[in-house]
Image (tube, rainbow, N blue to C red; front, side, top):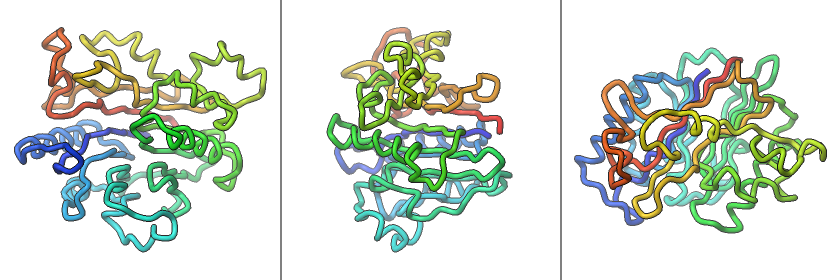
Length: 295
C-alpha cells in the first residue's frame, strides 16, 4: 500500500496568497503527473483550494479513478455540521482521496473520524492486524491548539477513542512542528515520540508508547543536492514539518521517501546549489511525502 501526503499550498488568492491562473494551471499539471507517476492507493492533499466554487481538485482525482473520502466542500456538509462548525477557512485543511480499486476493506467515513475542525482524520483498514492511518494538518503557528492537536492524536491512538487499540498505526501529514518539538513528549501527549529522541528521554522504561520517525535517517543518507528538509522558506530556509510516525516499525515492511520529481517535472531544484527563491519549483513550498506499507 502506498500513501502520499502533500501540502500543495493555497492557490486561490485568499489569505494573502495570490497566484496567476498560469501558475495554478502549472501546479495542477505537476500534481497530475505525481498522481500518474506514483499511483498511490491513498492521496492526502493539504491546503489547496479554499474556494467553494473550485472543484477542479476533485475532478482531477476522479479522472484517475479516485473517490473522495473526506472533504466538506466536495460532499454534503450536513454530514459534518454536528461535528464542527464548518467555515471556508477550514476547508483547506485536508482532502483525502482513495483509489476505487483499492483491495483493502476500508470502513466508511463517518463524522467521528474527523476532529479538530477536520484537520485530523483517520482511515481504518479492516484486516487481521487492524490498521489505522491518521492524516492531518496541524495549525501553522505555535499555539495552545498545536499542543492540543498532538494530545488528540495520542488520545485517539491509546485511550480507546477509536473503539479498539490497534498496533499498526501510521500518522503522517504536515505536523507544522519539528520532529524534536517538546509537544511530542509532554504529559498530555503521552510521549508520542520519534525513535531518535527515545534514548534521551528513556521512554520505554516508563512504558510509554513510542513511534519511529524515518525522516531524520532519510535526510541524513539522501544524496540529493540542496535537500535539507521537507519545507523551504525564502526567509527562513529549510524546515522539517512533513513526516510520518510509525508504530512497530519494521524496515522490511515500511519505507519512507520524499518525492523530488515526477515523470515530467523536477519539484526540487537540484541544478543550482545556492539556496535562492524557487528552490522548490512551480510555486510549491513543501515536498510530497510517501509511505509504503506491506500489509
